[in-house]
Figure 1 (cartoon, one colour):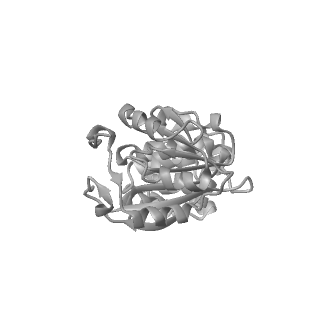
Figure 2 (cartoon, helix red, strand yellow):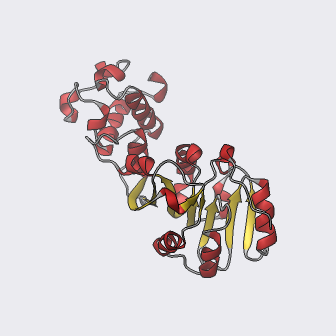
Figure 3 (cartoon, helix red, strand yellow):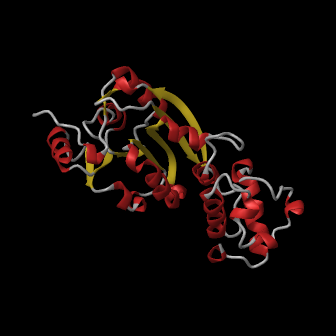
Length: 264
């Protein structure tokens, strides 16, 4: 089979380091009856060892040349191939207790993480290879430089664990950045939740849109309705100083006064 040339427009960097692949598969720990979905299987570096443990795997691949290669290499009993952009896929079609894995193209990593959020109740866990900088934003704590909207939104819904770094040399072509593996486990039904989740997300997005600005400035449209002292927050605080729980309290306080997301 002719060698596949990585395509820049698809953000393709193919994993080839056998040691790293083994570490990732051990971290995922596939079980025979798992309903597992791989996003962006590429040249099947992870697909092959995952199949050895699973028996069957569903993959989502946008590049039609790679789809053709996968169809020639694996039987339909081994692989269900969804030829589509993962950003357009309705993951509810795959059932529940989904285990999602993938070496994600860096250019769609954040949009894809947001796309998967509505399906979190159907997901058992997610293991992704991402740019290390993105993983550090995902797991960052309040007050840290990497703490961002992504941190708050994902920590609201998941427990997040950075598992390992992956050097550029593990890929072909080698990216210009270090990668990392993240594990994402959805929080259960008893997790703290905002009374109005649409308002919560709007507050977080508006606050971090100007992250160096004080909250009373970035939330100026509703600041007069916030009792900062009662919430235990400083009006001079900046968004990166607030925990997920702080944002929930702030959202609930405004929701109790009839404020909705459109007010922001």
